[in-house]
Structure formats: C-alpha cells, structure tokens
Length: 207
Image (cartoon, rainbow, N blue to C red; front, side):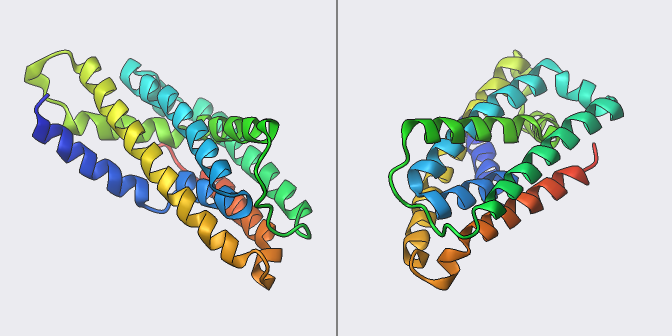
C-alpha cells in the first residue's frame, strides 16, 4: 500500500470517528460522570469490539449478517436492550451526582466489558467496515485481506487516540459541573444518552 493511500484513509477515519455516533457519545457519557480513566477504559473496550468487527468484515462474516435479516435484527435488538438497561441503571443513580473519584479495578474492568458488549451488539459497525475498507484498497497490489487488516489497525489506533483526548476534555467539563445543579443531574443525562443510542440501534436497518 502507498503512503498516500493510508493518509487518505486516516483522514476519512478521523472525520468519521469525530462525527456524533454511538461510540463517541458512550465515551463522553462515561468521562463526564466518572472521569477520564473511565472514558479511556471504555474506549479500550470499544476498540476491542472493533477488532472483532474488522475481522468480520475481512472474513466476509459482515456480508452474511447483511444478507440475513433475522440475524441482523437479533443482534441489533440485543444491543438496543443492553443500552436501554444501562440507561435504566443510570436513571436509578439520578440522585448521586457526579462520581469523579479514582475508579477501582473492578469498576474499570466492568466499563471495559461494557465497551466491548456495546460495540459487539451493534451490527451496523461490521457493515460500516464492510462498506468503508474496500474503498481504500489497492487491488493490483494484491493481498487484499492484509490490506484490510492494515487499514483496520490504522482505524483502531486513531480511534483510541481520539477517544482518549475526548475523555480528557470531557473530564474537565465534568469537573466544572461537579458542584453545579447540572452536575447533580449528570446521571440522568448519561441515561438519556444511553437510551438515545439504544433507540438509534433498534431502528437501524441493514443498508
């Protein structure tokens, strides 16, 4: 692959990562309420889920999901249900305000798992890579699967870097809001974000 090809893909990947979507909203919600460590660990979980989606796109599994309306619906409704469950949990914590203390190992481990599940249960992510990666391939260069994995790795690295920066920025905003009336309602806002993502996934279509 040529360097211009990779840089072109990197530019597109950065724009797509910064665009408002389930992943970045999920990271922001965790960072606002629990601090940058929570956001970064959540991002690591999301990126771990991306490894599975990228592999699925390369191996053609995404195409099978695309063709199977039943399988696509089953995965997306499980994802929507999981996000709505997280929203319900956040609404239950509505009176607790912001929690900006250093997270313990178990809490961070839980957030990492949440990031993985949230991404794995969104079939649109696999279809996204199935549509995106082929546009930046150099077919004459050969070894198309390797090229797709390389582009996937580039996407993962930039996504993790951007999510880390977003987590740091969101924590600063959370710190400013900690003792404000808005801060006391932050878990309600987080729950609303989770519910929005869940509804978005539930009504998504495989095209």
